[in-house]
Amino acid sequence: MLRLYHVPLCPYSRKIRLALREKNLVAELIEVEPWEQKDEFLALNPASEAPVLVDDDLVICDSQAIADYLEEAFPETTLYGRSLEERNETRRLVAWFDTKFTREVTDPLWREKIVKRWARRGFPRTDGLREAVANIRFHLAYIDWLYQSRRWLAGDQLTMADLVAAAHLSVLDYMGDINWEHAGAARDWYAKMKSRPSMRPILLERVRMLTPPAHYDDPDF
Image (tube, rainbow, N blue to C red; front, side, top):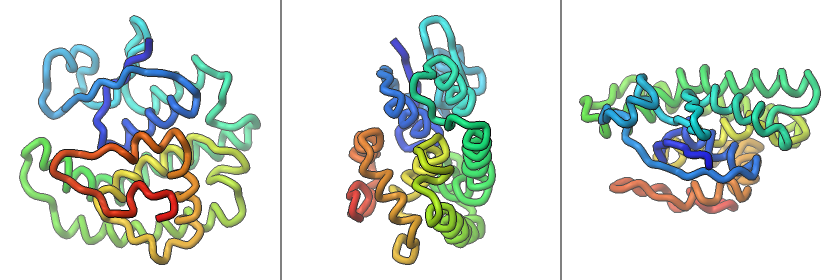
């Protein structure tokens, strides 16, 4: 039995939950609060960061390490593409969202507004919030450009690129930080992602004391 230690409103945890579902893998979900620095979680991951995947006696930390492990250990359904070109493009876009998008959008918004509150580490930096909201428009435009000539972000089949992008955007959308009105093809792509069985359980979850916008779990916005 696979066990996934996760934080529900966390893009990296959601990334792995989506990958598990798309690979038709069942995992026990164990909710954690990494900022509490509890001994039992520190024993699994000394960095005290989620997600952490446990497969029998094997402990895998870091969302990308987990994604790579799932691809290697359960290759029946690939999430990286079949050809070298597809796999390269998928990895490029995964890095885009987990590095560039994180630096320019996720960290200034999610970490500042939500994680700081959970960890009781003060108030968010308002200058960073304004810049991050402006940066979202650039990234939505890039998704729009990708999707206009492809069935999915990395090519003609769903890959980790779609899952990673959807994981980040779903968290920000829960927080009400995305204006979809002029998102064009990016909105169409995200609507398709919202309709997938892998995303439905995530979108139906609610975080205590934080209510998402009315459109949040509606595949048709």
